[in-house]
Image 1 (tube, rainbow, N blue to C red):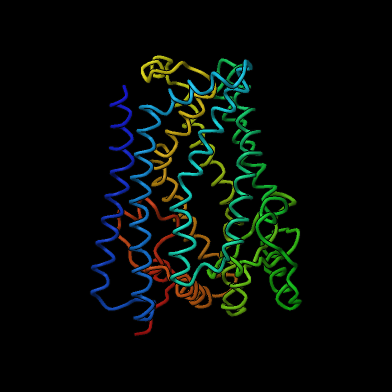
Image 2: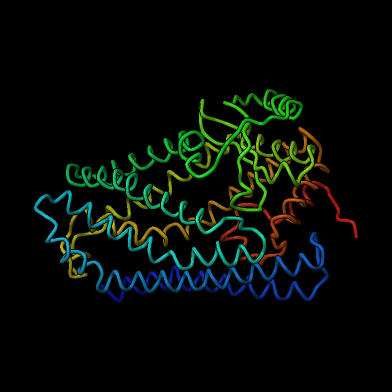
Length: 404
């Protein structure tokens, strides 16, 4: 059983990840031998080098994840169970501690790569603007949220496992409900933990945005500017929240680097997602994925755990669910990506009708230039990982032709 689980994880998750990264790396290197597209020659090379560096880190992350999976399955789960015998008599508290120790170890293991990506690689390419003290503050906030919110969620799932035969079904409804609640609370309670949001003080721009929203029937709680520049130099904008918590969020970097017409075109694209109910569709897809994950976890017989040399328990069930979730998510990504890319084309079309095709196309080009996104990717990599179509394809759909 041990060898079988290790084989499944490596064969169906680690190896495909590394193969896709290899294909993408090879495609980028071949693209470097051709004339640059979209980006200037220097930016084209910078974007390629940044993408290649990220792919190397992805390979390292895949190998680390595989090693950790094997260590957990071969020795870690039984070690945790032996350790938990000294944590008292209350089985629910023992199970909670079991899962939280697992999560904290995972958090610690992810720190070196996370630090290098943000504080070394992103800083080298001009993205990261965080000071070390700000990085530490964000890290501590994330840790506190993991312990507090994660602890509450884990405890609730443990209670469900202990009290319901079809625990996986009730567990699914719980997590699905929490995910929806998180979407509602994110703009007003969660995002402000990390960033400052101030009302847009450009009255003329505000009126134009509100006019666009009225055409679509989008009611928001306000238009806000996020101080993204203190952490990152990349550009973005989004509509966050559900119901009455919906709000328009503009990165301050976007206001600094994109024209007003381009900004309105980008927001028109986002309004296209609202018009086509893409948020509801995404929540539905997420729900299906969660349902499959909980069904798989709930269908695992106790003999599997016994084959690992551990006794079945609520904590062990949750840990096992967390261990197999990357594999399930990986093979769901092509389906999610397919529908997401279709939605992006529809949003582009709608946004271009609210403004015009040229404005949207030039705004997208500006985003790629500022974010140093390499414009060429291998078809297999796009199929598995891309939630947005490649920019060249989006420009063709907008009837925009690059000037040579």
